[in-house]
Image 1 (cartoon, rainbow, N blue to C red):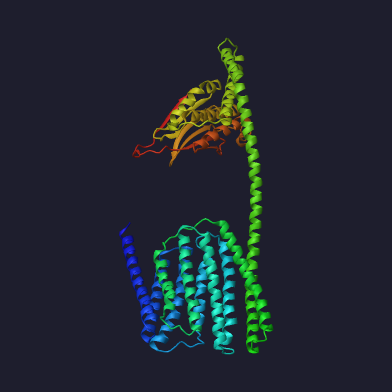
Image 2: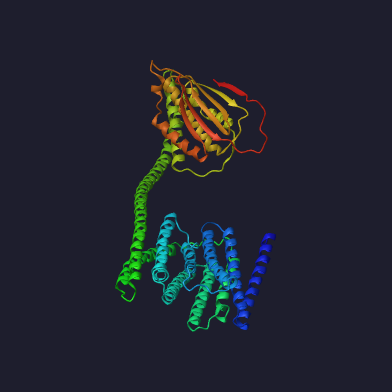
Length: 589
């Protein structure tokens, strides 16, 4: 625990101890003191201090929280602040002015509306993850309910305050509306308590206990007022003191960053119930209108006021319903488009899976066929070498050499097919591209000598090593060189150049044929690759992909063709060499 955490812990304990001491003083005064101005003043001041302490605790908690959790505690702070404002109004009248609060008090709407921010905080349900659309629609649904609650207060209470003043009817309807509001809040807190877990369950349980205690205090006070036994600071206010003191405990004991639970089903069910409640609130307006018209015991002025108010509320809620429906239509269209895209993607994926299965089957077939071809090809290669070792005429010797050349090309192609069809994981070690190129030249020496082709090299001696499988990369070098030799034999060229170079962190091996023109044809018309060479290049490309490399085929303006193999340089922790690049040029006759 950090020093700051210890300080906050001690600070919170001292704060709670002070609140407990103030609560104890309030309880003792309610039990021991008789009705007097001093008791009234002490009770009002203590209630103001307890509400101020609770509001401050919630504000600090909101500042330390984030996202929807911050908004949740901000709304709780607002509700407590409205409660505090109403209590300060009472304290101002009873303590400073030393008079009773007027029976028809305009500040009563503040007391009624202070529950609304608690409902708004409850509707956020920060313990349940919600998407952007659910948040927008949920806010609109709750706005409908807020308008309905305000409409209910104006409908029931304000006519007896401004249209036709009647203290008895005013108090009766105010108490009924306030009781209904607290009952709905208790039901919402109980539902949230039942559907939440861990820390959020404790928070909702604490808020439920506070609201229940406050509701009980209001009920007892109303009963005592009817029996004419209530006075400010009496023992009927003890549950009220306890409810106000519990606000500070809730604010100080809650964690700053309470985790969000994963309860998508609960969130969906909650959203459905909020939407249903908003619809019920809208459909209740005609019932209130019918009640306003049919109840002949209510004065005509009050009935006309309530009917006009209901029509105005119906218009406002109708506009909100229209906005909500437009949001639903846009979301439905978006979901439809998303469903179509998902269906198209699924079809493409299915096609790719079927194609992959076909390619895998073909790969198994090709791999098996290639293994079967190895034996006769090996025999043909042996017989061709044996034929070259016999006495042949000058006309027969080039033909026998060509037979050996094409048999070797076929053997290389079969090896490429086997590697392409059944690639096996291999260990990668630092490999020198210059050494690989020299080895490829030596292994294909019989091919390029039989074709009377001169092979030259231009190797960068400072070229860094690459990370890979030397056998697979050697196979790629041999295949690229074989393809180049094939193009040379087709074009009548007499030279191939192998060079290495470094481009930042990329090592390059380039195999370039001499530029030439065959029988007056343009060189670019002769640049198509033989199908067999294409298969070999595909196998090489597959190997290089495993090594995070690539193959490119370039053609210059002079007709020279270049196969370029690129591989990333192997990581090294040695200091970079300051030796200048030296080119080694060696012809192979």
